[in-house]
Structure formats: C-alpha cells, structure tokens
Length: 267
Image (tube, rainbow, N blue to C red):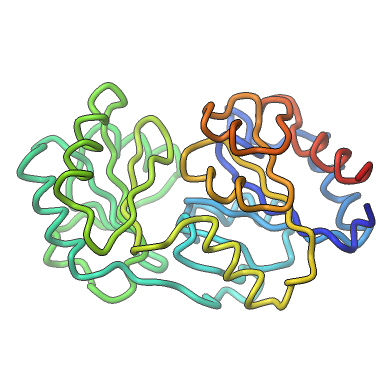
C-alpha cells in the first residue's frame, strides 16, 4: 500500500514504548521511513501534555495527537488544544464516594496542563517519580472545575478489582471508565475513548480518505483497535485486545511498529 494513503495511530505505554519506556532504534527507523514515504503518524495515549511530550519530541511527530485517553486532540508543535471534552460535575461526587469507600486510594486529576493529586498513596508517589512530574497536592475543592479532562485512580493491582466493581455499581452516570494498566483505572467524560478521539482527529484534519491503522495493548485501546481499518495488537496485549485486532505483532520490547509498517507496505 502507498504510505501516502495511511494514518497510523499508536498507543505509547506497553505498545510503542518498551518496558524501560524507550523506543527501539528499529521502530524509529521504520517510522521515519514510513513518514518519508508520505505516511502520517500520530499517538493516542492516556498521557496528558507533560507526560506525552518527551515521546512526541523524540519522534518529532509533526501532527496533532490524541491524549488523555481520547478526551483531547493536541497540537504539540503549536502547543495548543484543537479540541477537548471536560469532565462532568458528577466527577466530584464519584471521587468523594471512592474516598469514603477506599480511604487509601490514590487520585490524580489531570487538568489541561496541570496534574492535581487530591489523594496520595504509594502508587501515586511512584507514578509521579517515574514521570518526573511535580503535581499540585491539594483538597478536591481547590481543583479548578473547568478544564478537567480525566481522573486517574491509582491503586495496587491486587486491590483494583474492588474499585472496578464499586464504580460499575455506583459511579456510571455521565462518565466512561477505562482500565488503562494493572494499577490505573480512569474516569473520562461520557462516550469518550481513544476510538472517539481518533475519529475527532480524523474529523479535525479532514483525513476521512485515509486508511487508519491503530495499535494497542490494554483495555483502553480495544475499541480503537477494533474500529480501525487495520487493528494491531502487540503480543503482550490483553486477550480482549488481541481478539479485536486484525493482526498480532511482536511484543513491545521487540520493535512491533516495524512489523506493522512492513505489513502495511505489503497490503
């Protein structure tokens, strides 16, 4: 297939990024060759602006990307939002319910360009240290209501199912919940997902004629992979993502993007 006809949108963590949060040289070469041939390449990530920027800059991605698990389309080159969907007022009530039910829960509130921590725990501490971020620690009532794009619940994996069960029984009106990693469970605006974010990206840029390939590994990627013209799951993906995919490629530590691009070349 002519690369000029193709838009590739990839998840970052667990897909393009290896376990050390780096990108293989083989994948970088393949991506650069794909773009040199006229292909368009973008990320679709749960990360916010600050968390995603290092990867965007490393790859020199020159087109807008989907961030906050689909709640925003952001132009890193122009440093501005092209579109975003804010959390509903019900989010505060759900956070209060979780705080009461799980006193040791971690809550990160991702504002447009700021991260607020209203409930700290070891999982949050490790997350902030790993991302090299300094959040604002404050009470929930001190967080600005406008511009909240997602809420991340950070909790040990062995405890997370209790949180999932609780939210699905008590915290579902007006929001969408996605499980983005073993220790992260995220509250998004209703009907928002990476799949809807990719559709918004295509709409904003007028790319309706493009062949869209999407790659991912976790539950928050499943719909995006399923709805793409070519859905790719890495070998380390959840079974539900593999079942939704058209192809399964090598795991995130063994240059999966090179395989995806080679597959597209042969179509």
